[in-house]
Image (tube, rainbow, N blue to C red; front, top):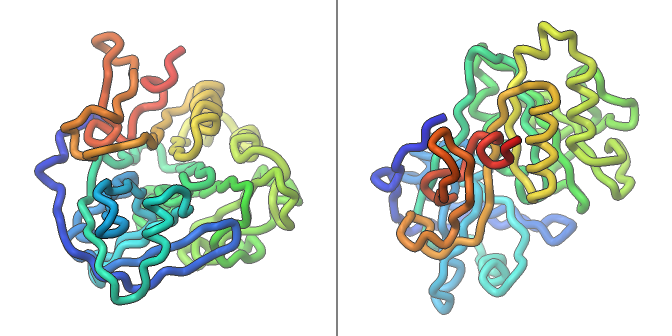
Length: 292
């Protein structure tokens, strides 16, 4: 995937809060009416939100869902820190300034129809967005694997869609994904019912090991989550010689490429280079983020 300059596609709008749902584990799902941003959002992109009039610095949040017809966006986040704590106090009818969508999203390859989307913790939202955008595309079959050390902020159900390679304890799925025809399985080290006991990347390895070589050659991997999980996802893709794209998360000030506060060191064909997560990413090829 070749990064492009996305600053000309970023929009600023005052969004109305439609709902703010609270879930166990100090998690919230915020829905705002932001029709311009919703019309242009792609899986892997994010928005920069004003949390409160008294807090000048915006906060970047990955977009979990975007409905261009109805004009709304969903964000899953944990209100950690002064800014997001203030955002968590916003209620229906409040106004939130939204700058977005920002960044280059995932670029699925139609030549590899088997998609494994791996999300960990607050890295789950881009995987949900990716699944929703691909669910009606006959070129792709998507499997979403989620890992969390707090309760999953979704209604869960027994996995009605069969997935080969999944151990018996990994029996739960996300009801919303199942309703889309997208299979999902869950992993945690907290002993939750219906979850694989271990890391989500270990669950992904079991899936890949169950596939015959010809089918495994049709797989591509996408990931978002904490640094350790991203490294493990990149290592997993390298182990099975699979293409992999990762959505990175970094602290940001401007989020539009001006301050260069979110730069990361990548390995590029032209040698080591500093790239901005906000506008050069946040999605990068895993081999550039974690070279051999």
